[in-house]
Image (cartoon, rainbow, N blue to C red):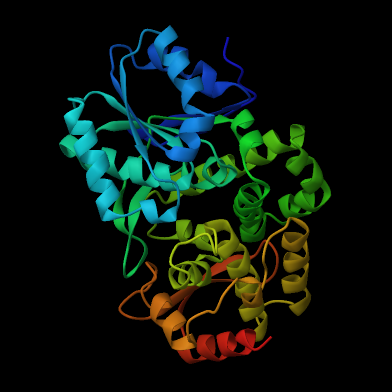
Length: 371
């Protein structure tokens, strides 16, 4: 019997799938996959860090279940979401003679999930894939909803496809091997769900943050609540033509900062989102839309979680405001050249604002750079 603590169903008709959350799911993946997808072969895509910590567990389970597999191990880090690594994965899957009816397994964090999912979407004109997210960020966000892709020199996630997984296995024990900084970065995405439209969840996080970081029962509950939230949004707006854009709260600023820091360890994705969410609340306050104290409350909670909250917290020197604005102008939500931001009227009251005045954004960033 699989060790499943929570199940979240993503009801997308013929593309529906389950998110299983539990403490030993990597070990049990072989048995689960053999039962659910009989007769398939597997192509495992992972990175060098995860390969050391988690790949032996997965492989042992696959072999016990009598499943055939090939493995593609990539460098770790955001820079792996590139054209070169996409080619490496696609050619690796083809070299392994995996057929269209076989399955790709994305074993890793958000980078591997996005890259492997995109490779699956285009290899042999579309292969099925399974997400086994090993980071908190991937478990609560990037593994759910079918967004796959790579980065471009022009910006983050600008090349990709919507391609839903067939199954998501979120193993809670994998989080125990994360570095504190990586776990904190993932927690920024947890907080995001409260800030979008669930102020009660944000209050619950304020009360339970310590237990979530310590690995108590609140950790699994938080992940399940985030997945259920995202599933509801994806069901309503799978291709992000409307409300799904709310899930990008903090990301417009955050992605620009990630691009400016070269998608490097200077600023992890979740760290960029943390700063971006504080900026989004602050900018909303500057426009007279939200109470000023909410930005401080959000920043205080993220700071307690060990996250950066200001531009000054980013190591090294940032590019000019013009450089940051150029990155913002490449945001995926831009329509006919007009800036679209996710703003807020307060904690749990995010909304989509189109035609945002770039000069107001520029002035706001200039001020924040001087603090």
